[in-house]
Image (cartoon, rainbow, N blue to C red; front, side, top):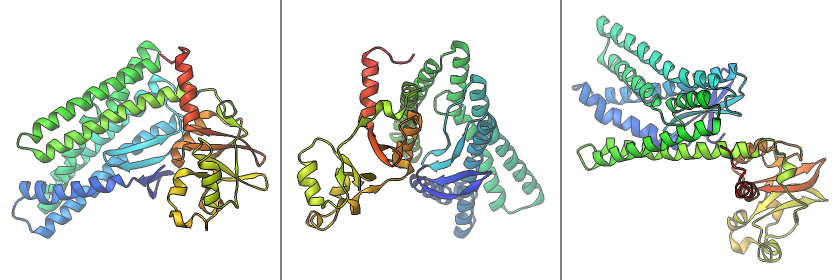
Length: 376
């Protein structure tokens, strides 16, 4: 998972993507400057700042609890969960596999909105108790906001567009009726894209009206939902296409290698400029020790190419960029996604057997499609 680690809850690692900070400070600014001063006038600036900080932090805690509920139910269904990542438009639970039955999919999806509604009820009760007990409006105001925002969060997530929870519920129902997960996903992701376009249209209408900030929110959320829906469908097709395959079936065997002590200038002259490859395995005494790419060379000032070696510039071998010949391609794909690398070295007993690139996977899938073997 990308981002940096916050900690763990119930064994699930909680991480924060860098894009989250943009939304965090945008929400903080909106609460502090607009919402709380408008709803609760007459308070000091320092009070609005404290209310904004508390409201923003508790909102993201609500998101974590929402995603945590998905993770806990998924775990009870035997689905491995690696953790939760907060990003610009919410959060996501990272699972190593999809639900195996429509029933499991339904239960995993529905628990998120239910959790948000329970949180809304809790904050509503807190507001009611505080209002009757004479608590400060700074406390009851934040509680009222959190109650409302959790209702909105539950309602938005129940919209029938994948990958929202409502889209997953819709997919589980279609999956149950048709018995075809690919068809169900295609319909659900189409709903997600349509919903995304509707939100973008609504946002544009508001931008040219009187609600610039709200319009921009709708445009950003619609854009994200549209892209997420398309990505989710393509990922399913990719995983189904690779199901049952092993690394040795897709790898390029016996790839050309470069010695670790080669100077970057020699590497450029003798390899990058004379071959059509953009990356090469690096070996030392016949054993693979890393990968060096064109982009890594470009990051080194040209005048220093004569000074640095391939070994000083490469990415060293690690579990994220190596695979065994018999390893499932689903695991290889997961390594590529987690490491951010588009290449994996296939090794056995310390020897280099081959290399798998994103292009190898794309070309194999294209041949499969050309032969009329696409799913659903």
